[in-house]
Image (cartoon, rainbow over all chains, first blue to last red; front, top):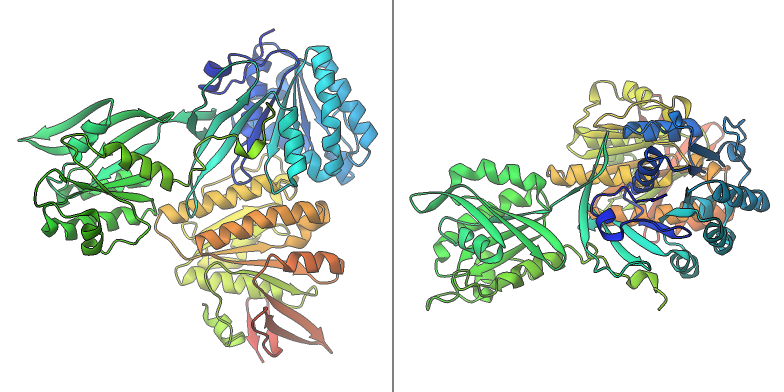
Length: 393
Length: 220
């Protein structure tokens, strides 16, 4: 029986979770990442797999209602088993036939093994298990993985990466055949959420990050990040969007943009949508509307026209309201009277940590450095890397 | 800072990014103090996030009365869901359970994002109370959770208050928790009189006598 992740794009990459393998959702503590495992379980439940789900921090009733919030009525499936380690922990009678007191390590160990042997897919919240049963429980992972390998089952772990000791994280990472990082795009607050494959030992795959939203009902939905390109009239926004995009379209009238520029860019593993706004003040409502959805801002200024800088600052203030990171593209650097990026920074009173990148959009020079600088500003945490995991060779 | 805070602890100026422990025995007035502070600050324009582990969202809203504004006040109710499994969330009220620290953390983070994106930069967070969480989860787990949460408060420049009941935890627990906080508002009761003071590594105020009713704390 083919078992899949049920997560958009991820299934295109890994194809399936083969028998005996362990896939771990490695979750940022401030992100609702458990939904990934719930979606994986429900997808396979629907296709007839025998699936089991362990709960330690939520009562069985709450677990079922959380599934239902996403439209997944798991309780009505005969091939679904809920294993309750919560009720015995809080001293309540369990409504599940499979239950154990998590303070009894041997009971937990034998219940987990039995569940693995009897199911095609088992979801275990490893971090909750560590929180409730103690860090020693991580030492049992090897035997559970072995049980899965011997019985042809698959394990899905959820691991919320609280600041556990390094050896605990390493133990979980080393026992995982595949790791999917579920994280946040950190700025002063978390501006968006992403997932990406960090490790997989059954396929040779180049990783990429996918932004997602949670939809109730529906679950994990991938979406494409929006970058706002703004700036005064005739600063070269449309030229910039066209120069950097693999495909782009502008809504123009009499040679200037009157609605939107839209460009799409595939770059460094990301799919990015660029939205350019018209520079005239009467279009500022569009700026505000797009600012609510965007992840970052590129402010394009005409380096030869310092008289437009006050308007550029005004536009920046409009989007600063949304607290987004921004980069300044100092355009038209190919013209003889262009001001240097440092001069522009000075005249616009820009803080030192705001990148001002010299660009000639018409020649296509420096445009990707602007995208690089913006991606860098999104703290790098958005980029999926395996550094955290000390992946064995 | 709120007028009440200025009256009760006039020498104390809480900087943005502060994480403050509110500590004292049961019925010493700390919960009313924090609620009143929260009500005052949200009335003054702060965005407010209130995490409840002992009362339902509905009873807190009733206490707030006319001051309740769902645009400015976001509530994480960790009581109702464990009693009524199907209690529904709204835009400003999210239901979690006390043991689901990931859920609580994610919801707080989401509210921070909403305030940030809507241009609200001054935010007050109240955790009422940590003691309930410590009844269910071990100290190490709660410490890890708070490590992330206090870090986020510093990053966003919010001000956060965490209520801890005196007498419910051993000394090691209190000492461990104190490491995470930038200061403490301490309450005590002696001979039927109530007092409050502020303590931080840099400042220690004198005890001030206070009177507490169900709506506010005042200096005697």
